[in-house]
Amino acid sequence: YAPIRWKTANKVERGRMIADLMRGRRFIGSKNKSVADLLGPGDCYLDYEDEPCYGVEFEGRYFQLGFGVNHSDRPGEVVHVSLAPPGG
Image (cartoon, rainbow, N blue to C red; front, top):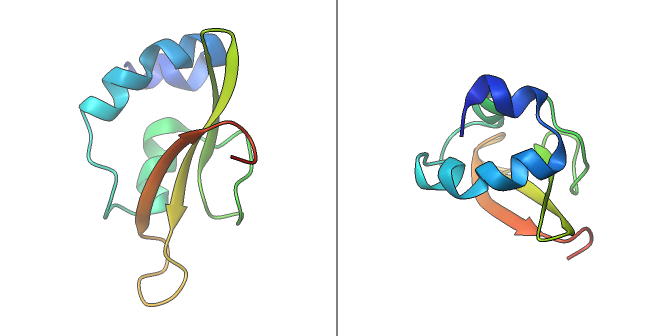
């Protein structure tokens, strides 16, 4: 994973970086703005506009790397990270 490369990479290149990205960082408990600062603007949509989402592809399949955030007592705090097909 290379921050500058991620921001300009296509979905396949991002797919190659996923393991390194997830291994090297702790996202749970961080703020959605921190995720966007690190990875750039999202390019897909989860359930809410403030949940960062990034399309990635590996082994010929498309996935969404999503960062679900708290919307009640700790707004904007990342509470889960998912890697799933759209709608999954």
